[in-house]
Structures are given as C-alpha cells and as structure tokens.
Length: 399
Image (cartoon, rainbow, N blue to C red; front, side, top):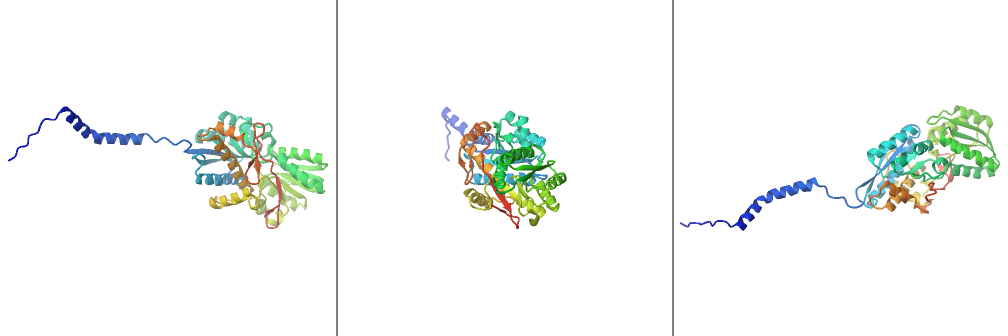
C-alpha cells in the first residue's frame, strides 16, 4: 500500500489558490458592472426629436395632417439612409386645433417633455404671431422651421428664431394682380378670414390693386375656424365683381364658392395657397368648383416635371402615409423637412437648438429640385416661388 505525503503549501501557492476560488465571484461582479453601466453612445448617434404643434382636428385638420405627412415621409427616407450624422429623426406632434393660445401652450409643453432640437410645421399667421409676441421661442431658445403662413408680420423684420419656407401672402397677391388685371379684370373683391392672416392678404390686395389701376369694389370677412360666410357672400355678390381674391382656408373657400355661385355670381375666383383646390371640389362637387384658380408656393407634386416632384413621388411610394393623398400641402411639409435636415447636417454631430438656428442662416441658394431657397441673418423668408393653377372639370389642378 502506497502512502501519499502532502507537503505544506508555500505562501505563493496559497495566494494562487485563493485567487482561483474568487474567480467566479469576480466574473459575477464584472457582469453586474457591465449591466449597470450603459455603453457610451457614439458621437452623433442616438435620436433627434422634432416637435410640431398644428391642427389635427377642426376645419384645418387636413392642413396639419398634410404638413406632418410630408415631413414624416422625408424623415423616414433620411432615417432609412442612416439618419443625420448617425442620429435618427423622430417627429412628435400635438393638436392645437388652429387656436393660437393652444399653440403657445403646446409648444411650451413639447419643449419640456420632448426636448426637441427644433420645432416644425405650425399652421396659421395668428398662431405664429402669438409665439413671437409672447417671446416663446426666444425664451425656449429653440428654432421653428416652416410656418404654414405667408404673413408679413412673421418675416418683417426677421424674427431670430422663426424661419418661413414659403412665399409671403403679399407675393401671392402680387402674382394674382399681375396675371389678371392686365387681361381686363379691373373690378375685384376680396373675401378674407377676419384675423391676422386674412387682414394681411387684404392689405396686400388693397395696395397692389391700387398700384395696378384696378378697383376694390367690395370686401367681406368671416370668423376664423368657421364657415359663416353668408354676410360676405351678400356684400360681394351685390358689388358684382369680375374677380374675387380669396384669402381663406379650404372649408371656408368651399362654402363661399358654393353660396356665391348659388347667388348667380360667376366671377373668377382666385384662392391663395392655403386653400386646397381638390378638397374644395370634393366638398362642393366638381361642377361647382370648376374654374377655381389656386395660387401655389411649391411645384406641383403630381406633375413630375421637377426633380423635387419626382423625388417626393418616390418617397411617398416608399413610405406611404395612412389616409393621406399626395398634394401641395404634403409637398410643403416635405420641403420644410428638407430645409431642416440641411440645417441639422450643417450643425454637425450632437447639434443644439442654437447650432441649428445658426446653421439655418447659412443656407444660401439651396436648390431642392425646382425650388431654390435662401436665408440670411437679415432674411428668414426663404422662398419666393409662386405659381397659379386652375381646377378642371374632374377636380384636378392644371397649370
């Protein structure tokens, strides 16, 4: 029988044995540490939040939804291509019902809850003016890109934190006067929304008609967020104008046209860009809506005659929004989103709202594919593009 003699372990061996016994606990501890400490995000990665307060209920719901859809289509395309400096874009929207006090409240809430790098797509002259008058954007230090308004008060003088990506209402009215007065339309009326938006367009019409030697024969207003147009119809029909400039939203424009035609007046009607022509045709019928002219501030998205329209059509097909038809409002949202993303690119990785604001002012002669846009410290009205379309017997817009 063999005996095994165990020699006492020396101190180095004892230390090795103690280390071996502790290895499982060390490994377990390292595992906990790895779970407790999240990995550092790569520079420029993560998420950039864009916040929107706009009407998604009430008479201007189609406008808010169209703007949101156009922006979301472009953000989806950018995200599919890797984002901006590796960061994905997320659009957070809230319904303000086209009410200026709600716009102010929503913007403040969104700033606190979503911490956006920029705001996007507010609808309405009065809504934008409220943000300026109450110094909301300046206090928050967050820029707003794309207001669905061409109001002069939003761009003259330029407000440091607000950037408009469309032509002004004055530009639109001038286009109407320049096109219609020379061909014999000398007696013209104005139908307008009785708020800062409508009053802005009315003032422009009074000025340009006088300069062109035409006569403003009547004017009639209606209350914002309503279709109470009866008084305006009566006043304008009695004046028997040759043409009517309509500074009004889609629902009110449709009701006005229906009632004016029913009153026997066949004046040429020309609506500013806030009216969606095909929607008017759906509301009152193609026959009644036929001949309505509508000013546009973006190239026709259905014509496929510009690189912008073709790009938008492809993106719309790749990332189709639910229950939204491709139209000029969607195109306007898409344009605004392209401008904002260009600013985000220029602002660099991990942009702050201030860097985005400063980057916007560096955008010069930015060709979006048939529409050129420029900003500067002295100019926050980026576009002067204006065109006029007309509804045909099928409810479609033609140039």
